Image (cartoon, chains in turn blue, orange):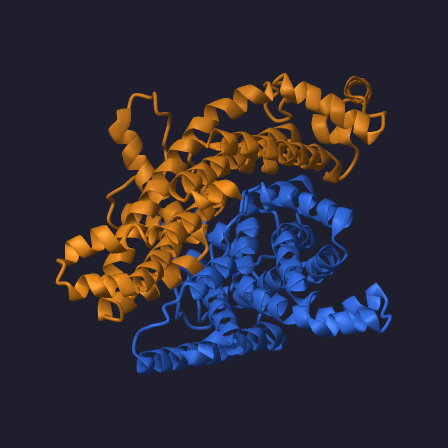
Length: 303
Length: 316
């Protein structure tokens, strides 16, 4: 575990492993129900958010960069500006909807990319073993030696700021987590009879990896990815807060918090609103990830 | 134990080599050529030529790396683009301030996490417990820099209890009380996420320990609750808690970097932020290296504590 960073996903996985086996059965059924309901509500919330940021901006009259000098600092609930305006008189709702597109992209895209790369590396490492395994794992250890956010900041800080930079930086810090998971999962599948049978039948290593091992490793990776998206939206918003992401006048939620910070005293809603948006989405992804994990985890059936 | 320490230290050497390679390569991630990246856009062509020659930028990458490593080991991190001062003189004074913030938050996270987790476990499923679990979920999901701003809004702007920023120096004229007043908000901000995670693991671990057979036997024998907790529960529940606490270090250090920016805390995080804004690559490199090395060292210490408490780990 040396040098390993924490992440919500790992922690939750560990706490799930340490979950109590005792307690009244009725309580666990209730809790399981409540958690599934939370996952269900979260899924609906996320569908709503994705729908809003996808289709909301298409509705006419919303312009995130349209500065109305006469309506600066309008509070929430002002006529024509449901969520108020910022220091330049720009409509907060429009900025929130347009910014949400970037924020969601920065959370989801690196998680999926890192998932695919990590899956490939872990599969290769766990199946081929030997020198290849050693080289891949030692390289990944180096990434673990950095605090997660520090490495992302350093990489993004050295490159030209932008959305692509953010996505690359977050992908780099995530790959080792997926690779370790995929490697462990691969190692547990390799000794199974069906793999041995495929080998005895003369299957080539690449065919065995793709047809027999990949499907078994895929599940855990998907679950892990879901639990990580929420955290990555938070990390991505942190990079944007530092000015490493989209550049003004375009903004995502993290950059909006940074803009609001300047007028925190005068108009706190400019800071509060985008932060609440990040919180809701990150919370929803965490609940959803927990729900999916529980649904796929045979231990939860016992509860 | 000495054997374990030695193995752990030897094992960390390749990792540190890898870390130094990553930091060396940062310059080559920058747009444009390395000489421009290191000297800034205003530098003259002659100065760039000279730097290319002295740093061996016209040589192959491995040769460049070895030359860079040799200079770094001598403590020569180059000259800051923005301030024209030697990088080391910028980084060293900031280091102490980041340590103060990190230790302060670690202390808050551990104490609050353990105490609240214990209270929650003893009243599992009560209203208090459910409330705490909801709060930890919120604190664990919120962006730390935003939480910091909300705390500023509440305690500095609305209630006027604490200063927003303006922390000068520990050796400044304010004394220890002044530092503590300025430390309160940033430290609490940084501690919240890790405290939430620690609270949850302490609670889970204790509930599990409370249900073990030997605890039931002890309870059936009529042992007092305080005695029961002290002798049979708390120590048994500790190993996963310590592991998770150790894992929070990276999160805490990363969070501290952002918190420093929010509160203008004069540590490495603010320095990193300033140097990114100024595209001051030598300072970015040195700051990143300093934090990464501190993190590697902290992890060794965590492993040693773990090994001290759990003899089985010394064999691994």
